[in-house]
Amino acid sequence: MKDPKWILREVKTHLALVEYERERIEEKGLSPDLLEDRDFLILLDAFIFRFIKLQSALGEKLFPLLFEILTGRDRTEVTFIDILNTLEKYGVIPSAEYWKKLRKLRNEFVHLYPWETELKLEAVKRALEEVETLEGIVQKIEKILK
Image (tube, rainbow, N blue to C red):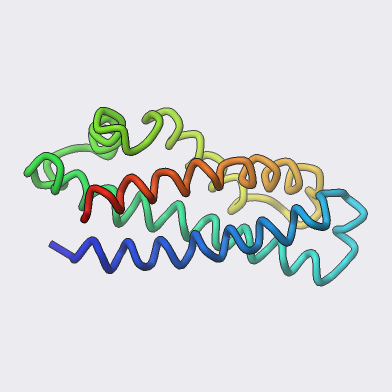
């Protein structure tokens, strides 16, 4: 089994950068005219990249290991939805549906085209709203791993 504390470190790095970028975005606000500002676009892209990395590191790396720790079962014996349901049962995530919603948001970022500015802004707005919940999830995982 991989050391979950190393993966938690990776997750916390992504989270810290997402929080930093969120603060910078919120200082400027989210408006279509800011998409003409190259520095703002770079900031948005950095936020999106880190949000995707954070969500992936949690879901693909840390959640399966946490499942093994909590249940003593091998993660390869169950489906990902079983892992999510277990994490919901232990109060790590709000719900399996919540995580599916985040995964859908992540996929929206991956499939957005550069000219879909309104969709991009709406997706960023929803992602900004999820940062606090993600922070809470990371804190719960940290407590379990201690």
